[in-house]
Amino acid sequence: MGSSMESHHQADRPPRCLIAKMGLDGHDRGAHVISRAFRDAGFEVIYSGLHQTPEEIVTAAIEEDVDVIGISILSGAHNTLIPPVLEQLDDEGRLDELLVILGGIIPDADRDGLLAAGVDAIFGPGTPMDQTVAFVEESLGAASDA
Amino acid sequence: MHEDLLARFEAGERTALARVISIVEDRRSGHEEVLRWLYPRAGTAQVVGVTGAPGAGKSTLTAAVAARMQASGRVAVLAIDPSSPTSGGAVLGDRVRMPASNVDADLYVRSMSTRGSQGGLAASTGVVVTALDAFGFDQILIETVGVGQSEVDIVRSADTVVLVTQPDSGDDIQLLKAGILEIADIFVINKADLPGADVAAMNLQALIGAVGADDGWELPLCETVATEASGVDALVDAIRAHAAHLDTTRTSDERRHQKTVSDVGWIMASILDRQHAQHLQELDRDSSLIEAIHRGECDPYTVAHDLIDGGRAR
Image (cartoon, rainbow over all chains, first blue to last red; front, top):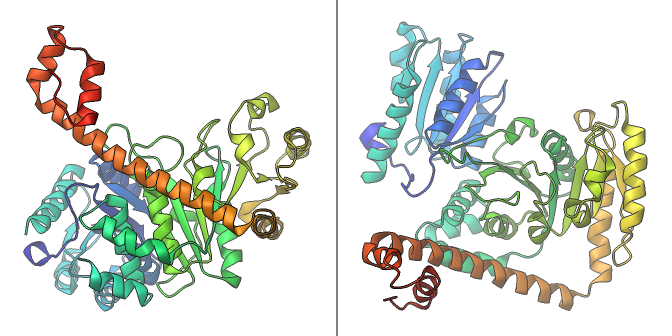
């Protein structure tokens, strides 16, 4: 993450962001709200829809050539669903140049493992939208300046 | 400068296609060289435009058509949604309706924002289609922004235009107005299971009859229920029939001629667009020029001509 990220994001175009929902989790209000926040910050937000598999998310991220993947997960299945996304991104050579952020309910005990596996940041309930958007903007900015 | 990327593109790597699309869409450095390389490799795909009012079911229908076409060829979907006039951002939601896919599948879906363009398409639609065509897709489906009456840019980008309507979408006077009705090659009444579909079909059929056949093509009317994929086979057949019709009625020389004129046309348009933006920046920075207009020493018409001709108005 951060300084090691080789983003292809260039300042003269809107950054692209995939907002995704995975597995059996059917609660997408949070995903809609964060989609709007990124839209209002000038991002092109691709919304995946519900019930995506890790493979579908990786396919969408590659086909859409996004700079950021934001996964909203409230089901508690993050330790099952997130690592395959990271592994497949790595297989396609895209993990290092993408920012992967998680939102939703992730217990403290699980955070370090996910961050070590390649997640760049985790935003829990109550995180102000501005803070999430600012983190992404700073990370992309730092990467494109590098 | 993008040799490695283009080699991977030629080898059929989807990550390379995705990046090439970004380069031409964003006009990043080297985009013109990339387009020069792509151009001779394109020209074989059938490009189908799917247009119609917001909520008529374009995405769902496009997804159903793509799923059918996938059985007999490689299909790309280019789904366009509007950008925000205030932030420039966009929520691109068409992917939600698309069939499940993976990186090796014969289906590629790309979402685009209009980035401020009017007319139902993004300004870079043409170059993105060139990239998809060069990659080897047999069919390219372009789903436009939800359009009203006169957003008819799709006709310049597509070989075949499908107009999607729904029952109760307004009285037939709406369709009598100039614009959208005249550019369609195939008409669809989607949500044909809703009450009023029969009447809508009757009205639309009467209008189609009045429009009449263009160079021998009998305008078909398909009734579909996209959510159940019902009527989609007939629509796919109509799309294929239109491709065959184009092959038989227009000689290949004539089509190549028209296509080349239109290709050079949009390349010129994009060069002029860029120059226009540069001239505006020049003017914005040159307050002496603006003050000269304010003092009445020269007029904006002279300044506009001088900027375009490369001279300095004084």
